[in-house]
Each structure stands twice: as structure tokens, then as C-alpha cells.
Image (cartoon, rainbow, N blue to C red):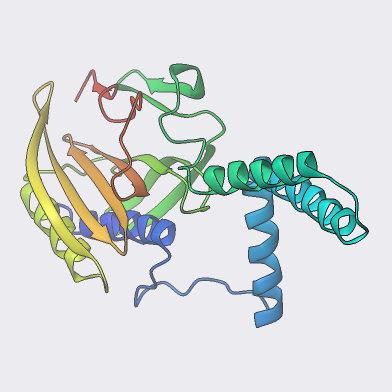
Length: 253
């Protein structure tokens, strides 16, 4: 069996750890030039992701400020106090809600396929292709990935074709390596594993926990191709109408 398959899975592992914000020995993320830049970038990203909650919060603070000013001047402004407190409470409640990406409806998903498989990914996923050098030649990978904006729900779907003439003989060593590397990552705890089968193709599922984030990965191996499906979400978030795993089909080996 080609030795490079473990390296290919390590690449996938690196991507899913990026979603969790974990540093691995073979991966050094790019950081902003200074701590001030990092802090500013974090504030901007937070504001963009939560603008629908920030608007009522700011409006509520304005109402409360007006109410306080009028109260000090001797005016009666009970309505301003009520509206201000209501807007602030609504915004705080919205801050505590999971991301709007969670439990996405069917309309939020886009099909991807070729002659050998069919799947769905969240609409707006970034698609890319890359070549990976192996001892047997260049393996070609297609990848779809959502943004790295945890704690939102994040996904990776990718498949890799072996070089011409190469073939997977026994997928079990790769499945075992996936479990070992997931458990070996700092702060990561494997919470479950199980074998999978899809249209006669062997697969494996690994579930792990990292600091309140749950990661589910499914890996399928055909004779000449590997498929990886990865989902990262805040712990305890229900899947809702999420069809990511259940819609995946392998039509040809």
C-alpha cells in the first residue's frame, strides 16, 4: 500500500486542527505582525460575525443613556428605560445563541459530484485543488472548505486521487493512523470510533473533543481514491437538518 497515504491524512488533520486553533509540530500558522494587530483583527471579526446582535445592543445602550440623562434632569421616561433594557436583553440572548450556520436548511447546501461520488457542502465553501508529491508520483486533491471562523460550524470535504498505477491494498493502517494522530494532538481526546461501509467501500469515523469543540471525521478508501469529510462544531450543538454526512454517496470504486 502506498506509504504516502498517512502523509495525506496528516495534511487533512492539519486542516481540521486549524479549525480548532491547535498548533501541531509540522504546522506553524501565520500570525499578525503584532499583538495589537491580532487584537484589532479579532475585534473586527467578532463585530462582523455578530452584527445582527450588536445593532440592538448599541440601540439599547443609546436608549438607556437618554433615559438616564432625562431622569437626572427630572423628566419621566419609563418607556425609554423599558425599551433600552429590552433591546440589551435581546442582544445578549442573541449573543448566546449558536451561529446562524448551525442547523442550516436544505437551501444552504450545494451539491458537488463527479462520475464516482456525490456530496453536499455548505453554500459558499471555498473550492481548491492541489498536487501532493508522493513516492509514487503526484496525487491530486480537490477540496471544499468553510471559513476558519470558530465557534461557527465548520466543514472540510476533500478527495485525493492516487498517482497513475498506485493502489490502496489495505485501508486499515490509514484508519489506525487517523485515530492515533487525532488522539496525539495536544488537548484532544478521542471520544468514539467506529467502522463504516458505503456501497461496499470501507470507511472509518473518529469523534473527538477539544476544549468544548466537537470534531467528527469520516474517511473512506477506495482502490485509488480517499474521501475525507470533517465537521467541527461547539459541543452539544445538534445537527438539525445538516445533510453533510448522510447525503454522501460513492457510486464507483
